[in-house]
Image (cartoon, rainbow, N blue to C red; front, side, top):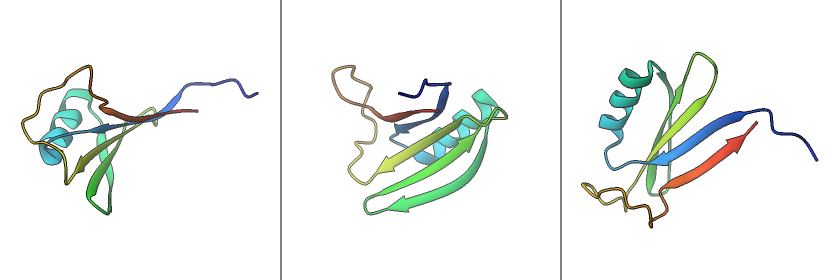
Length: 81
């Protein structure tokens, strides 16, 4: 079995994609590098200077203004490199 070397990326569901991209760019000094979309969702991909990626996804079904609840799944996935 391979040994994990680190994290490659994390993808999070957000309520306001544009606002979230702005916050992550400012707070973590990372850069948006791509946009993706699929059936019922849009995603922005951000990359840090180290290469670590953050995906921010807004779904059509996302409840705007909803607060985080630890009992509700919010993490889309975490990729181990």
